[in-house]
Length: 152
Image (cartoon, rainbow, N blue to C red; front, side, top):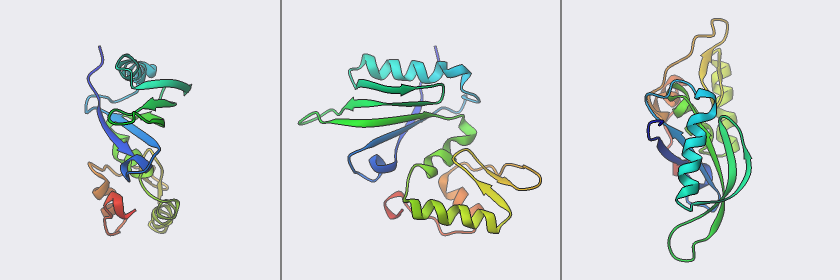
């Protein structure tokens, strides 16, 4: 069976609002293995009674409905992304923050001769990927002050 994923709430969920987004990652996950990892994770959530509705499922993305634990057990929309470990922090940054911040980050990358996406930061021309072991390291690579998720 696949290794247990590390998960992180993203986007509005990370900023304590009503829609949920989740990223799953594990240091040994170097590729998505044809969606097997995501399917196993989704099945675990389904078996636990957390997922209530499926909207779309692919090899790296899942969209559906979930039911939160706790008082009132509210239903929420949830998006789940399964990313290889070398893309995890780029995906986390991409899905946490405002559209304005995303634009500022991408413009800064362009100014530095780079391209920023939800998957990587790469140098134009060479295609070399800039490694990042955290969201903070992505901000540093762009020469920008780090912003905590609630500041984004």
